[in-house]
Image (cartoon, rainbow, N blue to C red):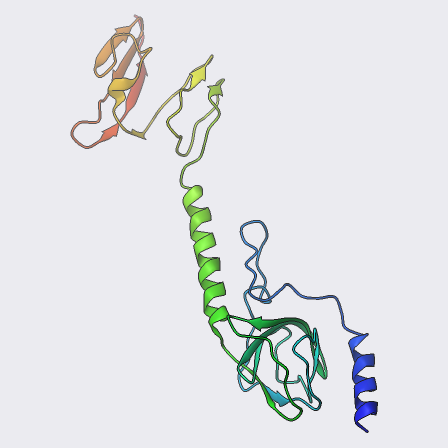
Length: 218
């Protein structure tokens, strides 16, 4: 009877659909994470081994996987095992001896339980850190150093900007006293023909502004 059970289980293994994302492997920022990569979990997931399982087995036959998520983690005799997919009576795509535990053989009849293990926390922590680092990198936007009549928005790094057209700054953080090319108006007010140019050095509020006003020559 045991041999018939094992043969039937092997047939089921041949019908496994394509594997899910590997549990516990953060994909962001190169790709988006999934519930599988961030590790699924369910409550009260428990079954037993109907036959012995070796320490090298890449799939483990169990009595039933009905209460287990599509992928996740199980604990057998203290060994943490990550599985990538399942059939009705098997856990497949295994990572044995996960989470700092050792891969060992297991006897028939022992308990197999779904559990929240350290890998769940560590995976989510790594995903959050990856997200924060990505957001931090977006806080400064590099702009091209050569601009021709293009509107500037966002934040630039410390680079020189060359323009063959007109660059208009309506609001910026810093000292406008460092601006050049504004005749008679660097850090002050100057008149050039019909245009009044004012450059505020940002004192005392730290917010610099450039104002260009055109007036009639009547």
